[in-house]
Image 1 (cartoon, rainbow, N blue to C red):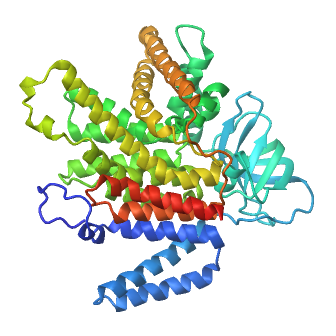
Image 2 (image 1 turned 180 degrees about the vertical axis):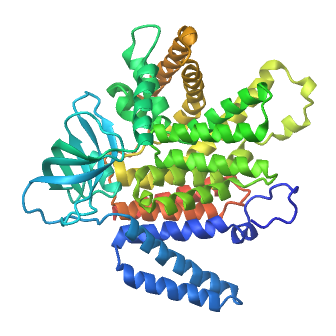
Image 3 (image 1 turned 30 degrees about the vertical axis):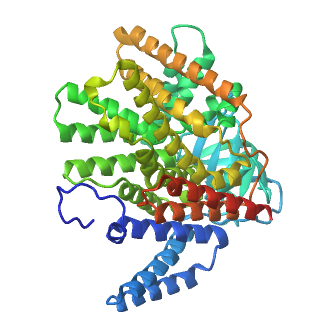
Length: 540
């Protein structure tokens, strides 16, 4: 990125910065191209030809900036759509000749059922002589859970997903699957998973067993801590899952920036206390965090958080203050280049929409709302009493938290309604309390995991697990209490995926277009008004 003075303070968002942010010019066309292919699946050959022509025109009109940039943007969108179509399986229903099949399937993701009766996951059909080749399907299979990457011969009942899926089927469709195989049974292993995948699976199981270990008998508390550290909401007790879902705080149990940033801060603090060299320690911390991301399943939100952390750390090491928006765009571009199918993942969409809204709207609004008043600026620190000082701090913290939470909720509402049919406005206030509290069990769980390999320290580590479980029990109690409040939530208000994507795109554009505005009503009021207009349009 162009920078006149590397020591100058970050001026924030402006048109010049957008024009000189290569990651934005790569990420936005890639994302738009993936969305185009998801919506219509146009002919790849025609898109490739048109994209090449557009890039050539952009090169030809290099002297006319507006024409060149427009042509390059169009070419990037078309080539992004081609990349998505080449790297993702066919979509839509397929004619099935018989319900019971025997297929060779590459297991992409496998999770043990909560009751221990088999496993569920996603896979690819690898039979080249089959009409189902490269189709992605949801799996429900009996027997032991395989490691990701294993190729198995599986028999079972095959069916197309419903045209208008709900619940779990809607999530499966969002992953690019078009088929569902139920009652499966493994006939044999065609190719084993890699040693690294098997190690990740074994580590995940060991971590789950350890995190459930408490100084007292409380399986629910252990399940809460395991769900928090491993990002598996399936481990949550039903009452807790319902409470967090109704208050819009279930995202606390998804591996995201909250986990990665908290763990990175804790590890770097320890390294600083031990006076370890900065660069080797930073590389080691990033490596440990990447192992954590892989062990927990490498969800889009965790990959995004890790890549952003890596770019921010690299910028600081290179004495370049990389803006958060640039890091977000780099993370988006890297993710889509490696796996363009992630664009259809609900977690990817919600994660990037929320972080974009926070960076472009929530953070500036929080800065304005939490700015000291005239009385605070004119009062000498020595004249402040203890209670008054803390009242002002709590006020600033609460106002900033509400602004950040409001921006994230606004940005995620269209996608939440499209995928889940409901959204909770109470989460705007509940998040202000629960998000800071969630760092406590994260840090305690990290510390207990670090101490668990030494037998002499196991009692201390188990009590750390106990402290984390108590904190999670308190958070659950708060979520249950908040769920009893009659918030003005939207329930049973499903919208189409296309409408949800359009709404999310409009809100993202609105947040970016006014990112430099120094008016609190505009930063959050205009997106709220746009969301209301979108909502009314979907009801017509």
